[in-house]
Length: 161
Image (cartoon, rainbow, N blue to C red; front, side):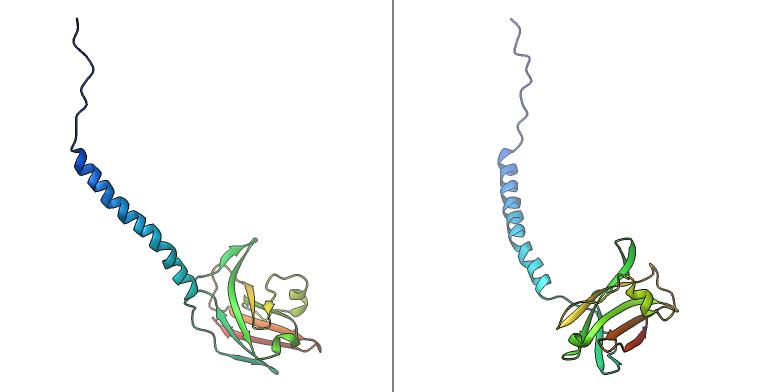
């Protein structure tokens, strides 16, 4: 008869492997429990970039703040950058429409009203906008704010970038 030809398994120190796995399993589970609290803390304490200087457009006062320090990003086929606009008390209700965009020349309200994507939107405590921007803003580009009130008055203001 032939001897058993099956190779005998090589035994490695099973106890050491098991202890090592238990040690790292405990650490990984602890990490998984802590991570949601870290992300919750980051979400509840955001850090925003410095706001641009406050602007006065006729009877209205506005402070424009970029939402992040990143450059423009592609959004629905065009490059945009997000901004938050903080208005004076009661100013938002007096505005008919407003646009914020990055451009080298002064924008025309008639062209913007024909369906431009840089329309201000939001609520009475602050407005938000996806401001149209070139992919790489140049040295001549400015951030333009164009607003129209319910009486038909048009106000423009620009910030150097």
